[in-house]
Length: 434
Image (cartoon, rainbow, N blue to C red; front, side, top):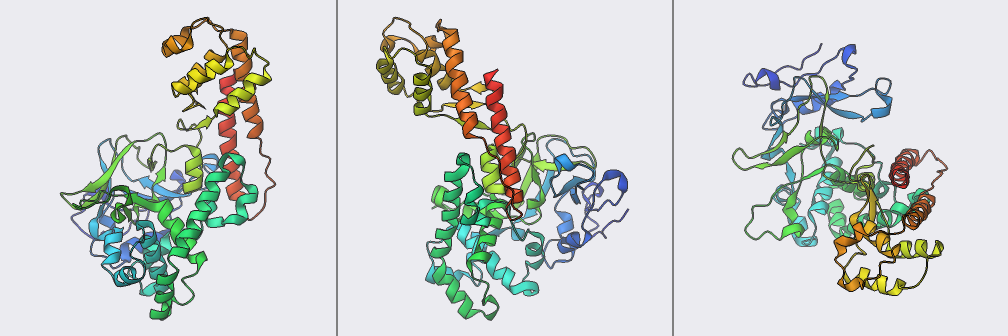
């Protein structure tokens, strides 16, 4: 066993940052990475900020659940324990960037820059400094590439299925537009700082933008004139914290503690000793996880597949049901806003979807405008017709989701995640058809 030297004797034994090197635990810690956080010249030693230690799950030990680099509990962690606490001076925020040497450039050349853009330019600037940067060790610790469409650019659109095509295109265009808005300030930075020469191009910006997008945390703004969601000061980069991987099965409480001026994450569940510690990135479905973070997770109860009223009408007509009263039924559906939230999730069809299909497959001779909507679930609709329209609706969507990727070396990781996403969504539909 190898233990990093303690930086402070005041650190409780349970919270000492250590690296376990034993074959029994199947963890392979990159020691040089830990050195980044113990040798770097920050005011507060990194070894004092958390109760967990860096680990990597090896492919041969857990190939089906491989999460890459992650964090492992050295001791058992209980619910309500603070698993990580990062001092304010170790957070990279728009406010701190604007107080740095970059502030005058933003004020003069790009005063309307978003928080995402400010943090991205900061990363480009500090990366260009290389070892001269106070944040060199942190920047060296983040990935050099990302498995999300925004990083690959428009060239990857050829492997993107219809299910996420529009969202993918929008993300790629967002990065491009964001960079173009920063052209002036980046040109001035290249002319003002020799080390920035050649480091203000779009490829570097894509890396910086994706770094912020995949690793930033949301912090509360306590300014009296906070502009809400458009406020620049809600995003922050929290070194070391971004090593925690996501799991939909855990719950945490995260936020900035105003009393001790630390950003803290409190676990709301237990973690066994030597197990990987997870946090929850939020209630995201796999489409968002893929687009924003580059991975999908099985058994994600946030997953669903959406339908349009046009999909339902097409299924109705294909089943050759009577067109009598169809217009009045559609009028009732629209008047009561039932054409929203039409989806199928792990729990089956949504309430609105069930209601619409019940309405369309019943011949109940009551004026629909006067009938309580809730009563439709109790209507004696034609069960065979109900099953028939469901089967066609879901099977048609299954065909749309068919995706047989021609794997390429350039996009193989992305395509693998896309394939897994479609399999997960298909399973939801297959389950609903039973």
